[in-house]
Structures are given as structure tokens and as C-alpha cells.
Image (cartoon, rainbow, N blue to C red; front, top):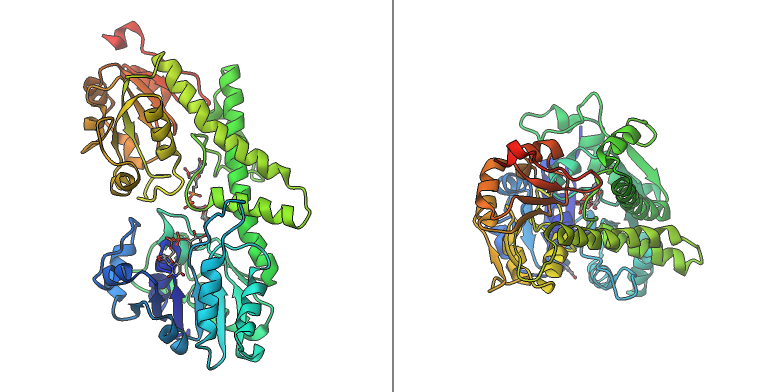
Length: 466
Ligand code: UDX
Ligand code: UDX
């Protein structure tokens, strides 16, 4: 029988908020702390603030009950057995992770430690952060016996964050003390003993009570490296397939067939082999840079990561050239743009390749009519609408009277758009797809001159044009 644990989660962003409501869903009592009072008020009122499947329903179910929201870290610390730190770890100018938020939170926690507590780093942090948190708490006069610091990296993906959290491929617990490891094991017991999956109305996913997810116990340093290495490896996989896509373009091969052929090898696997306009988001770019920077600091040559970044940056430039060669010149062209978020199913535009493309195209003198199913509000905050940039009500409105339509984000609903209707809306039937959402032959049959990534361009036959 799993027991209820008092948990504090510090930071109510994509990671912290999802962790908070999911811990409640697992039966724990959670205080979610954020230093932004407007966020706290919105969350108390039931506004989940981010676009994430299942999040509104879990927030509705547990807010002001099993999950409370506050700005008061001291109070939350005092009553918690475990405190998860999930504040941001942005990239500094040098590529290092900026850990000042983590440090500030650790110091504040130190001021309110009056009995044994486990402090858990959930944010993605470089190796040795665990040790720094411990030192910083000790420096604030706390007896070493009063606390342990544990590393419990989070692997959730935006867009499927809730189900990733409750159906994790693995739970990694980096603990250098048995006592702390036991607390973490108890927190995750509803998942690892399978009892969560036996309940009615659970969030669906791949695990069941007969096949629960594994929990891997490691040292704190290994756990920190597992997180960075995993993200860097996934980024590497994407850059690899993007480089292969470029080779396919140069040789008239088809990267989709190549990726399929590679992915059928169980040692390689089919996932994260989708070429496109490069990876983005709040994690991969900053985590690859931070991991490289850690290696540098430790005197380890990890130039491979520099290549990963280089390919990623080149991929966007190549796409711009592709648009240019489809249109001949760019200045004065009117473009419809589908997608602004860094990937489908999220409203997050942090480090979005789509936003960067829009900026580049505006810089080239194009005017843009953009549509994204969830990311337009956030986009408007960084790219305000004006003469050259408009936001459209839907995909067809974005295409209206445009010289070409570009797909920049892999929203699943883009794949089901009516190509005939899009073609009619456009001034010229040109579709430049940065996410390979359509089969080239299908797009050509619908009358499009279709350009995608790593696959031969497709053009309509004379009948299809008519
Ligand atoms: C962030 C990091 O990007 C990621 O690497 C890490 O694993 C977890 O934290 P995310 O949840 O997406 O991920 O960040 P963000 O949406 O920026 O949320 C951080 C929250 O912490 C914000 O709500 C912010 O207001 C809050 N915060 C920040 C604090 O409560 N206290 C602080 O001192 C700083
Ligand atoms: C990532 C990790 O997957 C997750 O485990 C970690 O906790 C946080 O970072 P996330 O950033 O939410 O998650 O999205 P992800 O699905 O990994 O995509 C990242 C970027 O890579 C997106 O821009 C996406 O479009 C791109 N991508 C992904 C590709 O270009 N090709 C692929 O095959 C997969």
C-alpha cells in the first residue's frame, strides 16, 4: 500500500506544474511554489497557463485540494518531506547553464529546514550541481544530518508531458544516501508497484500494473549526466538524420526510406529520425550547449556536440535557401506560414526554429501571414503583428493569396488539411514543407509544386495542374 507524502515543488513551469499535478494524481499532497504571484493566482483559479494535454483536467481535479499554489517557499518547505526544485536553468552567454535560480531556491530552503528533508533536483543541471546545492545549504548553517540532496531528472516531452510523467520509460534516482533513496522510492511507488495503473480513470499510457516502469538507482553525478547525455544523444540523432537528409537531397535519394531502413534495426530504433528544420525548444539547444561546456570545463574533448549544433544551425539556413529557390527571389513575396511553436501539440515558442525562420524571412523582405493552433499568443509577444506580419484565423486564411505556403511545425492536424482547398486559396501552388507532413506524390496530385526535406521535389503533371 503506497503512502501519501508531503511534497513541495518549486517552479510551476512546464516541468514543475506537470510534476505537481501528477504527484497529486499519484496520491500525494503537494504544495507548488512559484515566485511569480500572477502565475500563482492564475493556477489557483484553474488556468493551467500552458497548452498541454490532460493538464487542465488534473489541475481542475486537484487545485486547492491535493495541490495548493503559493509564493511562500518557506511555508512549503517547512511542511514538506521532499522538495523538488524545478525552476529554470537558462543558458548563459558562455553556454553554461545559469544556476542562479537553483542557488537562490537552495538558500531559501536552507533557512526553513527544521527537520530531515530530501531536496530533489528536478531541473536539468550540469554534473556537480547536486554537490553545490549541498554545500550551499551547509554554508547557510544547516547540519548535514538534516537533509540529503537527490537528483531525479525529468524526461517528459512537451505536448505529452502528463502521460510521459505517469508512464515514464524510466525513473532515475541519483542518491548517495539510502535514507533519501527510500523517500524517492516511496514517492514513485504508485508507478513502480503498478498500483496507479489499476485505478479507474487514470491517464492512459503504455504501462500497466503487470508491467510497471523501472526505477534506476544511481549516484547523484551519474543521474545528472544521464539527463544531459540523453538530451544530447537525441539531439545528435536529429542532426545525424538531418545530415543524411542533405545527402539524400544531393543524390536524389529519399530520407524517409533511409530512416525507415535504419530504424528497423532494433539497435538504432525508428524514433527521433525525423528530419526537418532542426531541433528547438527549451531543452535541446541549451542542454547540448551546457553538456559541451561541462566537458570543456573538465578538459574532455566533446567536439562531436559542436558538430551537432553546427548541423542544426545549418538546417535552418538550408530551408531558407529552399524557399528562395522555389520562389526565385524573396523580397516582396507574400508567404503563408503554418506553425510557430517549436514542435506540434504545444504552445511553447522558446527557441522555436519556426520563429527563427519567420524572423529570417521578414529580414529578407517577405510579408507573412502565419497560423499556429496554439502558439500565436506567445508569438505575438515576441513578433508583434504589423504591416509585414499578420496572424491568421486558420490554415486556409494563412494561405489566402500567398505566393507559397510553408510548413514549419509538425502539428498533427496539418497533415489532415484539405490540400485542394489550400491550393485554391494560394496565389501559386507552391508548398515548402519543413516537416515532411505530406507524401510528395499526394501533394503533387493535389496540384502542388512540393518541396520537403531529404526527399525529391514533386510536381503536378499537366492533368493535375488543370
Ligand atoms: C525549466 C528548465 O528549462 C528545465 O531545464 C528544467 O529541467 C526545469 O525548469 P520549464 O519548467 O519549462 O523548465 O521552465 P519554466 O517554464 O521557465 O518554469 C520555471 C518556473 O520557475 C517559472 O514559473 C518561474 O516563475 C519559476 N521560478 C523561477 C521560481 O519560482 N523561482 C525562481 O527563483 C525562478
Ligand atoms: C525533450 C526531450 O525529448 C525530453 O525527454 C526532455 O525532458 C526535454 O527535451 P521536448 O523539448 O519537449 O523534449 O521535445 P522533443 O519532442 O524532444 O523535440 C525537441 C525538438 O526536436 C523539437 O523542435 C522537434 O521538432 C525536434 N525533433 C524531434 C526533430 O526535428 N526530429 C525528430 O525526429 C524529433
